Structure formats: C-alpha cells, structure tokens
Image: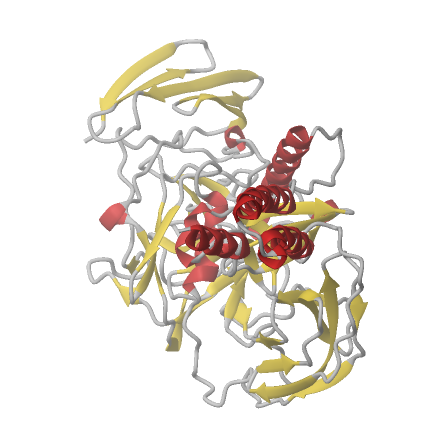
Length: 569
C-alpha cells in the first residue's frame, strides 16, 4: 500500500501541471474577443494574455500567440485591453502601468506539492528506521525524499508554463529560409530554433518600404493572396520567452505574373472565407451593434435591426444630421432576422455582362455594410443621385418610406483604423473596400464596375466619395426579382423593411440639425425651416416588434404638436 501511495504521488507531481495546446479550441471562437486589429489580412480573434514593454500578447485558438503594439490599439480594443491590464494589476497590487503579467502560480504550487510529498517520504522513512536494523534500508527512504525534493525544484524551474519574463537565454537566429511558390501563394519554411516560443514573419514587396507581418508557432508559414509579377522580401524574427528577438537575414522570392491575378483560369474566383467575413461583421455584434451572422453551404447570412452604429467610438444619436431634402421619415428598428436576413453568396460568379446601376437596381439593397445597414444604389427610385440633391446625412444614409435607415453613399468610416477592413459585401458576393487595397496600399484605378483585382488577386469593389460611390455595375451574377422591371428591379434574395405608419411627403426647405437618443427606444429629431425650428419626437415600448405601440409627436415650426400612435403588425 505504501508503494502504491508513493507511486501515485510521483505520477501526480510530474503530470499535474501539463497544459499543451493552449487554452482555446475552435469551438471557443464565440467566447474570444474580436479585435479591429488585423494580422495577415484577417481580423484578430483572441483574448488578452499579458502585456510587457508596450507589447500586448493575445492568445487565439490552439495556442496561437500574437503580439500587438499597445500604442496602436484604439477604440473598443483599447477599452478591453485597459480593463484587462487594470484587472491583473489590481489583483497583483501593482500601480498604474501598461505592463500586466499574470501571476504564475505553477512554480509556487509545485514547490508546495513537492515539499508536502517530501514530508510524507520522511515520515515513512522514520517509521521504517524504527523497525529496520539494516542501515541501507533505514536511510534509503530519507535519501529518496531529499532527492525527490531536489528533482521537483528542477522540474519547477523547467516548467513550460512559465511564460513570464523570467527566462534569461536569448534565442538563436532562424536560418535556412526557403520558399516554394504556387500561383499567388508562398510557403516559407526555416530551420527550427531552440528556445523559440514563436516566430514573426516580416514580408513586403521589394519596391515598398513598409513591412507587413504575421506570426507562426512552427517553423513554416503559408502566405496567400500575394501580388503577382513582383519580388517579395522576407525575414523571420525569433521570439524568445524573455523578449530577446533575433532577426534572420532577408531572402527575395519572385511571384510569377500569370496575367490574371495569380490564377490559371481567368474566371476562377476563390470561395469567400466565412471566418474572415464573420470576424469583420463581429465588430458590430453586441454590445457595439445588433448584427448576428450565420452561414450555410451557399450563403453568408447577416441579421440586424437596421439601427446603425457607425463604429465603437461614435455615438448612436448622430445619424440624420445634415439632410437638406427630407421626406419626414425617421429611423425605427427593422427586423432583418431569421428568414428575412440579408444573404451574401459564398461563391461569386462573374457576370457575362455586368448590369449597370445607372439603369438597374433602383429598388432594394445592392450591398450590406459591416454594421448591418443596407447600401442602396447611389441613384434613388427617381434615378437621381441622392447625395447630390441633399437627401443623405453626414454618414451617407437616410430613411426610406418604411422609416428604414440605409445608405446610398459609401460608408467609408467603417474601414477601421488601418483601412484594411472591408466596409461591406455586395449581394453578388464580392467585398467592398474603402480607400485602401486589401494589402493596405492606396487604392488604384477602378474599372467601370467600380472595382478590380489589384492588391490580393481577388475581385473587389471600392467605396469612394464620388459617384457611383460603391458599385457602378454588378460584376457578379445576381438573381433578379421577376416582379420588379428595370430600372426598379431588385436583387434576390432580399430582406424587406416594414413600416408602422403611412409614408409622408417631402418638407420643402427643412434642414435636419440634430438627432438625439433619449434612450434606445426614444428619439428627438430637430429640423430648421428658415429661422424657425420644428421637432419629431417618437418612441416605442419593448423591442419594437409585432404588437408594439409607436408614438410620434410632430411639432411644426409654429409650435403646434400633432400626436399619432401606431401598432406594429
């Protein structure tokens, strides 16, 4: 029995603190923080781990670790990081600092465990000494207890969970960098470096001065969607546990120009990456918006309530301001949910003849912004540029006849702090970017559809501040609603808005000067007509769904109020 107890204690001490593979798996993605920071062209998804010397360490799934410069973190990400730093430092009894290293309990617990185990050995040894006359038998267990204690201390020192800054040996330099090229992708590998916790891969076009970077926990990395017909410079930086990083030499790799964006078939279009799409739209999921996403084998589905959050640092109450041609409509929730969600094709297909937005699609959405707001044709249903005649607010949107808020111009403010984030996806399946290409470079010339394949070899549109703002023609195939002839034809599938009151008529000379949220379900719009002011106060109860009562109080410029109530059906 004593032998069994001793064996069990030894087994527990050697295995108790093993923790391979990281804390998070694929099924944990919904629990992780979705950042606005982008790594390797994709939004960072992972939880705060620690910070040291203005570097924030983020842990993703399967033990993947990223490093983000603290000074580059903005908006909701900064709020999240500062909260985590304060939480850890408060627990550790540390003052105000941007360094936050969680206390590593492993060596302490291992020391306590080894001490207790050694005491057990000593007690057993004393009892044996009382009943044994053989000196070797009398002192062997006591000797084993001292030896076990020493081995436990050594194991504690070697614990692979000590991720803090206590390591003292710098890593070596990565050598043997080799690359193999396939189409617009590059597989880079190098000799593994002893003591390296991860690697940072720096790469750029040979003609550029700004490096891009990504990380790898192994000695290889696959870089995709590279520009073709150019040379790339690549370096590998070794990351040590103590922060001593060593940079490799630079190699130059040529990506051949196939004449069609890196694809053998000029009509080949890669399938949309649902994880990238989901991470992009996740910026406007609760608590920063009402977006929800799902997907099947054909479509990526986007649900929202149609009430815009322009980004995590802009308040909700600034929409509608700036409109000078107003039809007396105001934004209310629209239930673009379940079977009435927006749908983006996962596999775009080039149209044989792109359909121009000058003569088509003057009804319904042509794209869906990251915040879940529909983007309509730049031309209204009368074929007139909505922005040019003052129908749009400072964000490029207004309300339709169902009190549904939507854009007619490009929501350029959704591109994110580094401009590498799509601002929307079109209903033909192609992404819409802002002023920058997907690789972060400045937007280049556009075709008649208002897009191109420059930057990542995949066709995409761009938003601009001039007509057609978002889409000049649908580059991809779309299905048309047979009940809506051109020019007011619309794309299917299409989500539909539903109002609660009759549509009103234009109020000539009115300029919207303010729009304030009294609460999430209570708003006050102020307009000026000449030198006098009028108001629209409106509110509803509950979530605004079926059965909800909506109250509108319209006060004209003479001060006369008119109150109306409607029930949502």
